[in-house]
Amino acid sequence: MSASEYAVETTDLTKVYGKRIRAVDRLNLSVRKGEVYGFLGPNGAGKTTTLQMLLGLVHVTSGRAVVLGRAPGDPDSLARVGAMVEEPAFYPYLTGRDNLRVMARFAGLSEEGIDAALDAVDLLGRGGSRFKTYSQGMRQRLGVAAALLKNPELLILDEPTNGLDPAGMADMRTLIRRLGSGDQTVLLSSHMLGEVQQICDRVGVISRGALIAEGAVDELRGGASVLVRAAPLAAARERAERLLGTGRVQVLDGTLRLRSDPADAPRINRELVLAGVEVSEIRPVERTLEDVFLELTGEEGPSHAR
Image 1 (cartoon, rainbow, N blue to C red):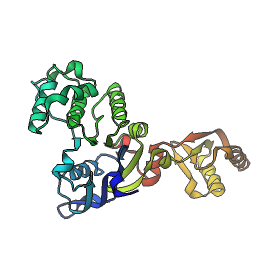
Image 2: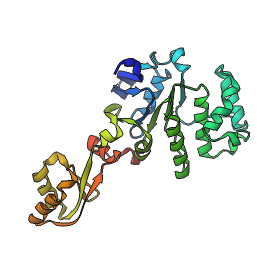
Image 3: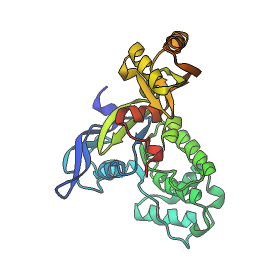
Image 4: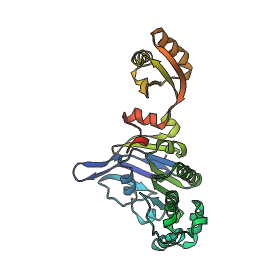
């Protein structure tokens, strides 16, 4: 795939604060045009710093980044990028529509696209209400509307569901999926594994500033595995490791997760019983992104990180 087919590419992108704090460590990221890309990792992993470097808001220590064919912060690429990085800030006593007017004038944009941006985030009917009356979900959606004013080729959203209740999160997921179904490219950072799994075409997993995996969601999750609930657990694990190999057996929440074809479940069950293990449950399961993150890092999944 040629470089022109990427909306964002980084090569060994690094950000070091002071002499010791390596916030981003030789990051190699590739976001294809027209996809919804999930930038996944726990809070503090370096996601926001990376997005700030891509927008030219933070100086790059070393390495290289290309955004829509240009260097970060280049006026030509910025004119084609819409972004919401960290929590959006608006004037509380202005209406949602007037806040967007202020932003459009500041950016030298026509005000003709304001209603279209409000409509895209389902706020057209509340555009005349003061920002201070908006719920947290509406405030986040207004932030997305502001990012849409340019009708951007690339939309960068940093933790867009932060602070939202379940209904608000569902609305935001629907909105992002809708935006990503057209010609726009969406780069979405999140620590919510379930959110990324539901709406993204591909994901990059970052941990301690470094990219540890990248690929399609289904590709990273792999095929189905086998869950075994058995006692004693230690004996079941030992027998399973002899049968499948240590790298294909994991203990999770008091059960064994076996990276094996579900069709092998009868044979696995028979071997465990012959070893004196009492099997109370054995069934196929699909791996989640949380399972993948655990395997890659040995850490608790990002959705539980604080």
